[in-house]
Amino acid sequence: KNPPQGNILLQVCNCIGFAIKNRWNSSKSAPKRTHWLDWAEDKYSKRLIEEIRMVLRVLVLYIPLPMFWALFDQQGSRWTLQATRMNLAFGESFTIKPDQMQMLNALMILLFVPIFDLIIYPLVSLCRINIRPLRKMATGMIFAALAFGAATLVEINVVKTVVEPAPAGKCLLQVYNLAGRDISVKVPDNDVFPDPIKDLQDLPNYETLLLEASSKVLGIAITLSGKESVCEQTFEEQKAYSLIIYNTNSGIKCKMVEDYIKKNEDGNPNIRFFNTRPEPVNLTVGREQFYVPSDYSMTPNKSVDRGEYPSVNCSARPETCDSLNLGLLDFGASYTFILLQESGTIVAKRMEDVEANNVHIAWQIPQYVLLTAGEVMFSITGLEFSYSQAPTNMKSVLQAGWLLTVAFGNVIVLIVAEGAGLEQWKEFLLFAGLLLGVCIIFSIMAYFYTNNDPEQLDKIFLEDSRWDEDEDDNMKKKNEEIQLNKAGKSTRL
Image 1 (spheres, rainbow, N blue to C red):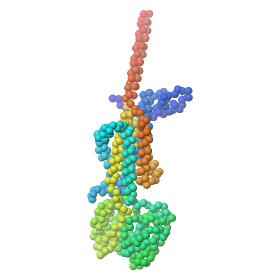
Image 2 (tube, rainbow, N blue to C red; image 1 turned 30 degrees about the horizontal axis):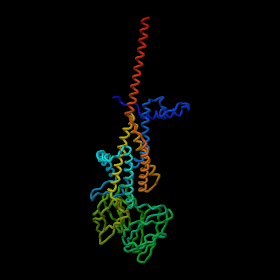
Image 3 (cartoon, rainbow, N blue to C red; image 1 turned 180 degrees about the vertical axis):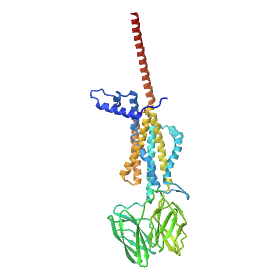
Image 4 (cartoon, rainbow, N blue to C red; image 1 turned 90 degrees about the vertical axis):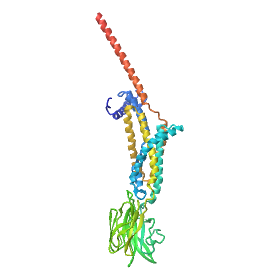
């Protein structure tokens, strides 16, 4: 067997370039050609030109395909980011990482390929439906669009637990009441906190304050037992704050801290501690160490592993602090633990600043099932179709074209995601709509596509080569006869 020689992709590019150049430079009086590639006949063989013509017919079908890959490759980006804001626990002891959901795609590919080949396709054939390769590919696009429709529904529910940053000219505020009795809070020019705030009440949401400036000083009126105090604080736009109100011998005091409201990328919870005692406290939560200063001080947020923390190591004097029960620290949540002194011991009152992820990761399974089914019908069928439509020495060219569609799909993601600036669920819906539109275009192109027959091409050029060989043999025989006749005449002379 002869090893392959030369670069077929380079030959194809050179032939196309020569045809275009020759057509451009030809005079108007030159005879017309049936196809623009025929202008390369001056330099390249008819067989190569016909093979390139076959390849180009398939490559035209590739034009809409990058849109599928734009959706498919978001498994490792957008879908994984979605998973970080979901509940990753299966039972009390087993959890997964957000990016491990991608394993479903690989497992289902191994499962779906024989199911489609041995069960689904034969059943469809029994229904007298002719599901040709291009129809399979179009159906695969529809499945991928449905997968993003499912991802849209999941995302709409996921974002309900996310605290969205305040827009320009506004900020977010929540209040911790540590005053021991109910208080009323009034913020100038803002209709927030309409009801009294109970002692140690965990408010469900942040309130949005209108600043109408990048930074503004507000005098917050706090009423306790009929006595009003004013707490002046400086607020900056697009930030979140916690206002901590407590009672001292000298009256009502307040302290404001900036909050970190963004969920962790790994899905783990954030925690911080606020110490109301006159002595500092040391705590160990999992692998994290916390030193909580005295006299109404707050620690920074730290990320800890999700799990139950019924007995956290604690050291403080002079009160007893052998252990603290923090309870379940769940995925995606942010907690503030207020350390209080009760009956000679230290207890931790938990406040949930950012709600825990309440949409389970299992809700991503339908979108993975739909996308994997689409991949089986689109990708595997597309490769088989391309291989069957390509002449023997052009299969690598079509393979290169197929891989280019994947690359262009990633470019589409960059353009749409960065340029549109939409909310994530709207972006999912946009991609689903774009793919459905592209699917319609692809279906129209597939309807008018005529199949290539590389074997017929081999037969035609094999017969031509045999005819040429016969002609050469006849010419050789005639030349030999002429030479013999000349030799006979010279002998007689």
